[in-house]
Amino acid sequence: MTNVPELLDLIGIFVFALSGALMGVRKRLDVVGMAVLAEMTALGGGVVRDLVLNVRPAAFQSVGYVLVPLVATAIVFFWHPHVARVMPAILVLDAAGLGLFCSVGTLKALEYGLSPLHATLLGVATGVGGGMLRDVLAGEIPTLLYDRQLYAVPALVGSAMMAGLSAMGLHGWPVTLASAVLAFGLRIAAMRFRWRAPLARGVAPPE
Image 1 (tube, rainbow, N blue to C red):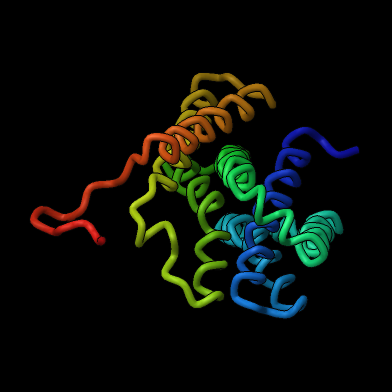
Image 2 (cartoon, one colour):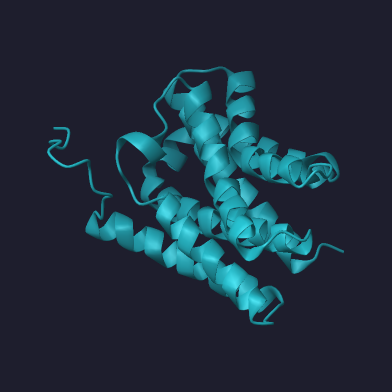
């Protein structure tokens, strides 16, 4: 039976896969290209995490990890105008996926014996890695870099909370969910209030 962390992982995979498939539509890719972007966006961060942990990637142990992005691709393939119209909702879901991935990634790193600091960093990589792979494959400068959006920072805060609570002896899915909610809330606030990371001193912001 699917446990709660795995269920949260699958929900995050579905959300990230939607954004990858939508990128494929915007780039006028065929269904194969859409599926590749969906799979890479959804699974890339988790695969990087598991390779660092020197374990078989979860994506290659469960059929669901592969099928969920394909389902998301099919939804976008047939109904992408409707999906695009609810893009604000997709961005909210993307923020939820970010929170879920960073917290679950940190939890898994801790379970494999990493220190809280290293687990936090690996949690961030889990959260942002798939999106960066999506943008690179689509020929875009990763959004994480060029528009200064606070994307990695919420993931860092959520991952740090996950690692900190674990170090204090607090465990279980409520801790994982609370960390995910914190990262989600910060990401939503960053979008709502247009928070941006500072540029180097003397550098004018892009027009």
